[in-house]
Image (tube, rainbow, N blue to C red; front, side, top):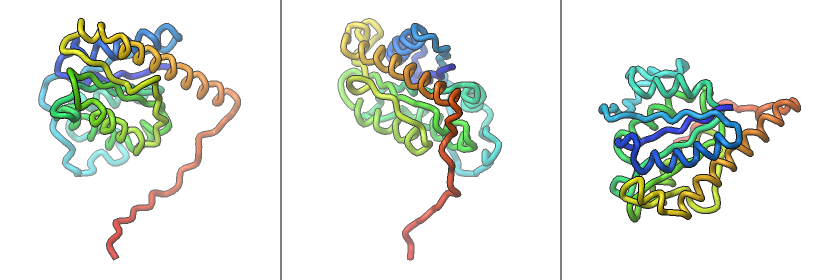
Length: 207
């Protein structure tokens, strides 16, 4: 079993990484393989709605999004990590997630457990957390929770490490995700099948 942890911060080893690393250590202690993927600092174009990704599992813009999608195929769960910019998801992370989830609608993400992790100095964390969770709930992904909201506070990694409650929530999140992954694997060994899917019904409310 393997978990993909996506670092949506422009700072590869900053506050968001520090939070993700704490989750990663808890997962590793439970025997779960991990990989932290940094989206990088190169500009990422947003989704243009061209549907060129339909059925292919990759985006027409061949950049870090496709790199992540390739890794995601071999992973069993995701943790989305993001800093807070103006009480929301940073622009590049938003562009990344729009394309990562839309291009992965071929079944890459469905029923894989997911969790969101947010780092901030002071505020905007819950709005950002809500935005991240929406990507997973629309993708039929079970959301993994912790003992409080999955967030840490600080202006640098050392301050984040001093947020004892936040770091504890990261460890709890890692252990909870490991438990859910093991439960899913146990069900699979017992022959438990995935829920059936229905053809998508789309209603725009125009009469």
